[in-house]
Image (tube, rainbow, N blue to C red):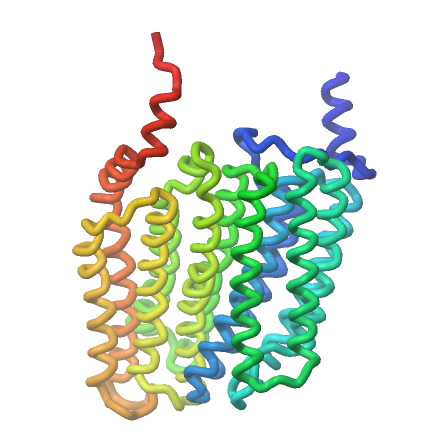
Length: 444
């Protein structure tokens, strides 16, 4: 009865609790309902960035759209990463942490409202930075600073590390605010934003070497990043649903519509399958210091996955209003999927400290259907916008999307056949893994 009462008190009474830091070696730690609630705001943020990218590509503003999209994805992903990093180390689920998290969720939504402004400014040759996005970040950053100060007070062992985050976040946020309110040439603002982003990514890693690591849990981080990856893959499913919905309203259900629906869902499933062939939790729980490089590899990965959804949103725009060629659709789908596959391999390489070039043949085979989709789009009605009333146009569109899905399927099948052996060999060659294995007691 006493154990039950203690557990019930922890579950139902969320008054102020100590924040001494979590046990970084705790096994079986899982994501909390608070963290899942926070992640819901990122469903909206990634959807908004994906939609804006598709709309700007539909207008023909290709390079400004890509630049604004990179800025948006970095801003959204970095905000999420900061929250996740802190809660993995100090998440005690008390009332203060809950309230701070809800305030940060408001900040995410404000930042999301600034994304259309960001893309519009980029389309007119201006900096994608804008005051509304900065205000959203300020709403998020002030609670984060307060939480790190609280951790510094209640966790003396990691005080210097916590205070380093306070300084880094405060300095960068002030500089970002100045970049939004001080009139500067566009090129200067862009380079300033790049410098701030690099500083904010590098400084915590340097501070950790000087002051020690925060007590974050490697297994918990692996699960948190995996869950956000799944949320991002949801954009592919949403894009598929929207495209097929428009198609069936225009022409009704047909074999081509079924193929497009199946191809979109298969692509989403294959990206999920491929991502989880990377043994993140298993490796990080043994070599937790590798989490820094591993987490940074996810920042472009989130963007490339969401961009696949943008390609499907662009397909919807093309079917509704035209203005996009079959080649444009092929590139919008094949390029982000190819980048995603390469980035997952890059994540694996960073995690295992290995550049296994024997993956190259599989990569080339995987990219072949993607290249075929682009070539087919280029030679089919070149220079003309998609017109579903044109004979064979719907079939051509379904072929392009089907070829892209085929590339994703080949990636999964190939890694199921050879991935385990490659990963095991990379682990055995790893000097740190060898020292770790040698230090473990052998069974008598």
